[in-house]
Length: 274
Image (cartoon, rainbow, N blue to C red; front, top):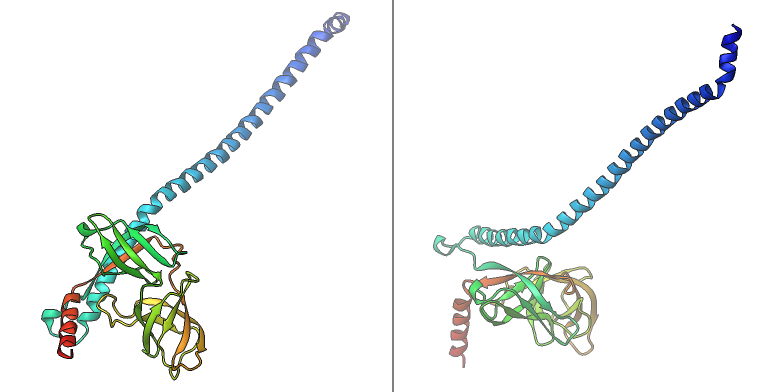
């Protein structure tokens, strides 16, 4: 027994060293597991963040393609709507085809702060576009085509003090002319509405359909301000446009299939009364 006690006394530092090594090894293994778990969790967080950003970038890159698809679909729907509206009228079957067809295009140049503003689009003669065609956006009217070459077309904007378009109050059908006074790109004027017409703020203004260029009931804007002009039989009406000309990018050019025929009969009528 005495020898055993002497053995432990003589080698106590060795046993203490061994015990401390075992404890240290245990703590090291446990700490390593915690670090591994923490690293795995951090890696998962970083991986999720990266995947989310990649998904966002991919979605953004696909956005232009999706927009173009929507524009084409809207063009087809507009054409079908024109055909449907005409087919429901009581007219002979042989002329039951839409007077207007839509061609989609993208704006590549635009101005809003000049007195005579113009736009340029990426479609031209090869796409069936000609001068004097109506141009609209999903929100409302834009203008009329002017110069056309093979691949491009310029458009006289509604925000051009040289342009005059026939418009009307949708609720009452009183019609007049729509012009821009070269001031605010968000507003136009509706002129020649008689001061006995019933009109209130918020009334919708649309195209009249009396020209050979624009179909009827294309949105223009809403009445914002009405005033009586002294010594005049007409209101002065300020209209807030549905279309934001600072944001438009995609438009539709409207081709009238019966335009020539309509203009011809009107010109022949004028000749009779000369």
